Length: 326
Ligand code: A3P
Image (cartoon, helix red, strand yellow):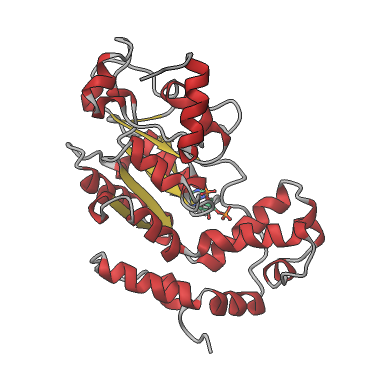
């Protein structure tokens, strides 16, 4: 039996197990040996109990804001780079490690009665996210919001255009979604970012290959928009939060904004900023028709998936998207 200095030993180890060079953070509390060598200042209560996983442009900020009004629910601290989203499980932040992630969830008293959560809308379609999230938070509940993938794509396009994306400014929505694989790279990239998150069934199946279906809650984005009080009531039931917080006195429809907003006093409301619920012209009919066809197989798979998951009703937008596609 022979050994080597730690660095050499480390190098040899990763030569033998190259697949382990990419870390996957586990939960120290799932293994007594890890827990024993962990700092006394750290607790597993400092991790979220549920994740709002997106996708982008489905009403995730509204849901995040409404959840933050709940006295028993706390969100993460804001990030200096990505604001209310931590974006840990996707992208480079993952390599900053568990301490970095946990620093967004400071320990306070009454931990066990508190429902910590985080919302990062980019988690939904991130290739590695379900695996990583499950390794750290296998018991977490997952909340996703779905609305017409065609409308979601259009909203995303409008969002990138307002943010000064040159390609979105130079090309119409129709040219973006119909771009072929011979189009310039920037155009193909924008097309993919518009279209790919909307392949809902495909992304949900990836989550479901790690998490049991009972841990997943799907919100109809149209319901969230039109009836947030009932949507949040159902969500609290799913999360088993008792007593239920009555949102009907905290949210009110604001005719000027055209959305539900937070009640601040009898005749005042606080709505989301102008980047949420933007005014833009309706989608051209030819683009909607194109997207109906584009998403046909994905939407058909979604209907099957929802039935398998025991959904009582298929969302109206899904029925509409599947109507007259020939
Ligand atoms: P638009 O700005 O295209 O209308 P996200 O927060 O995930 O980026 O989603 C933004 C979308 O949330 C908005 O898209 C808007 O339609 C929707 N939304 C749902 N409820 C809302 C609310 N109460 N206030 C503002 N936007 C809301």
